[in-house]
Length: 248
Ligand code: GLP
Image (tube, rainbow, N blue to C red; front, side, top):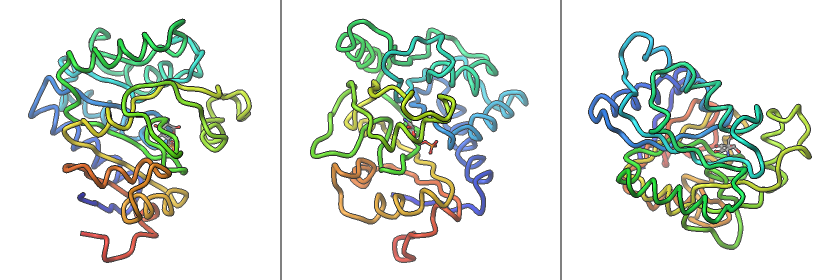
């Protein structure tokens, strides 16, 4: 696991955008996993700016989003579908046929998660999975618990995850759906490379536990320690609790 610490969130986000741009330049047909949340917004802004300057071409890139709220249609402004359009897809040239986001409103979620996994297999798997981290250690919506689910599935959200998404629901966490569809931990760990971005003081404790604590299903991000190609990009605040010995 490689760890890069940049002074500010802006610089950490710019570094992640540069890495993604480099990966797309090296492999124009890159298959990439994408997160939502407040953390990646600045990365998307940077990517949009690079795209405007013709430094990156997304036309052959295939994207798979990590998760979506159960019960929300793609047109619902609170959905991750809408989030991705607002913050990224509406601002770049990208083929919607190369864009996969779970349909939270699918009548049969089991079919929907199978469809998603099949599409991912057909695309050849994820070359790179870009993830954020929840304050409870979740990746996507793989919530802490006694067991994790390997593949894409329906997940029950913990109150903390609902609270951290309340900003999309007028600040009322009770309005955040109780369930979501999420890529599984095995799906994320099958990516050839993973890049985790965490910024801000509120992530310092979970980052320390994920990177240097025991590997446990009670902290899903700790499983990244098992992956052979993970880059963790942090700002100084998110890195604040890592012991010096863990930095290399
Ligand atoms: C959301 C998403 C996660 C994301 C996390 C952190 O619940 N499902 O994929 O990593 O929360 O969000 P933020 O970046 O807003 O802290």
